[in-house]
Amino acid sequence: MSPEYRENEHLHRCSQCKVAKYCGKSCQKEAWLDHKQECRCLKNIKPNFPPDSVRLAGRIVFKLLRQSVCLSERLYSVADLQSNIERLSEEMKDGLRHLAETLQLYLKTEIQDESQLPPAIDFFQIFTKVTCNCFTISNGEMQDVGVGLYPSMSLLNHSCDPNCVIVFEGYQLLLRSVREIQIGEELTISYIESLMPTSERQKQLVRQYCFECDCLLCQNQEKDSEKLAGEEHAWKEVKDAVNKVRYPKSKEEWKQVLARCQNLLSSNMGHLPDTNIYQLKMLDCAMDACINLESWEEALCYGLRTLEPYRLYYPGFHPLRAVQLLRVGKLQYSQDMFPQALETLKQAYNIMKVTHGTDHSLMKTLMEIKEECEAMVRIQ
Image 1 (cartoon, rainbow, N blue to C red):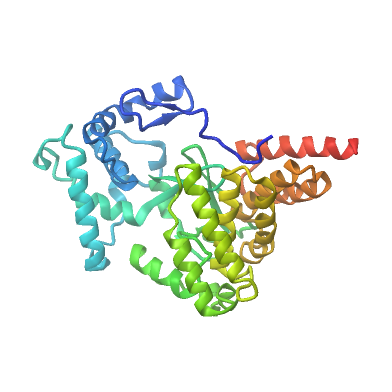
Image 2 (image 1 turned 90 degrees about the horizontal axis):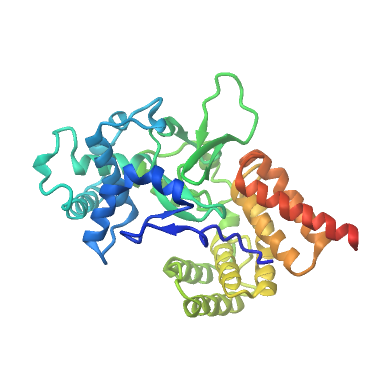
């Protein structure tokens, strides 16, 4: 049994554009209304496919032209979304103008001239709204697979220590509370990845969302010393290496990534603890490379080293920690380490029943592996 959760292996590509993917014929038929105009645009622009944000903006344009309303607009519509345009930096505005120009080129098959559009539809304005309000859609392994706009969920404010988390089931967004919430207490989510020092989190929030966070974690700069523990020259080298990694598309590229990770992890032994966030990201990268190269034993070695830092930085109920425990548990299972795997999977279950809920497909996958593991332990 492969320990990796490969949910994309059996997806069907659109026969026309070869870009859109579907879980089956009924799913494809249901999505055709949203995809048919996009499909022609994608075919026309080959092989220069646009970034996800441009595809999302294109779908918004087509939706506005159809004057349709979706379920995610029950509380708040696309028209109501805030843009923060007056607070964006000139650098950010220049980037958005460039995206607006890219969008115009992308849509030219369907919309020859922007003047054809109603005054309410402005490409630049759409991107200012997308930037401030979009959500990164993740798969079962919490890996980024796209972006989406969920207007009602844009009403939620940010905290670096939120009382809710967002997980996805396909493209359906699920809001889950991760601790007891008092009557009248505001629901909050984190807009950004929390595995950053306070100063980096603040920079990203100001750049993209135009505000500074004043939650207790930011006020106390909690865990910043652990995040940057070790020798500065060493973690800066690792940080640069991690930032340069792009998702490999072949086994040869994965081998190159793994070799780079092995070299840095070996040379920094004794200089960087595993709690250093860039060392942790390097361990995750090495684990991913080993899984893709089917080096299960080595992948487990790296995975085990990540568990304590994950516990430190994702305390309580956090979906990222649950998924990491699941991945390590599957690796232990693949190595016939059934008692250890069962203990790891139990920890994942206790978190995931809160962060994902018992009906989530990933939870069902976890339950299947956990039951198999329990059977193997009884046999032994």
